[in-house]
Amino acid sequence: MRVALASALFLQPDLLLLDEPTNHLDMQAVLWLEHYLTNNLTGTLILVSHDRAFLNDVVTDIIHMADKKLRYYRGNYDGFEKILKEHTQQAIKRWVLIFCVYIPKTCACSSLR
Image (tube, rainbow, N blue to C red; front, side):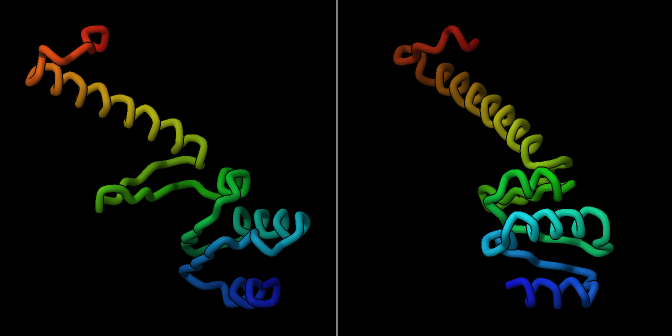
């Protein structure tokens, strides 16, 4: 894994695709990769990772795909998660209010209005 990653970084590509780059790396290698990606990478990085700390330290923008649509968010993963939660709560409130208008007898959501 280290050799493949090193050879990809050595080429200095315009577009770098990394799928779970931290999975087979020790902590020292993860920290080195994080430093390299944040300080030396000149191209675009598309990153897939379940390592929240790595994402928070490396990414500056997030593209989220849902309902066959791409939505762009500025910031790290924690910021994205906070904004997504707020948008989801707003969508639920709108849906509940619409539901209560069309089916008012079965609605117990007067506290949300």
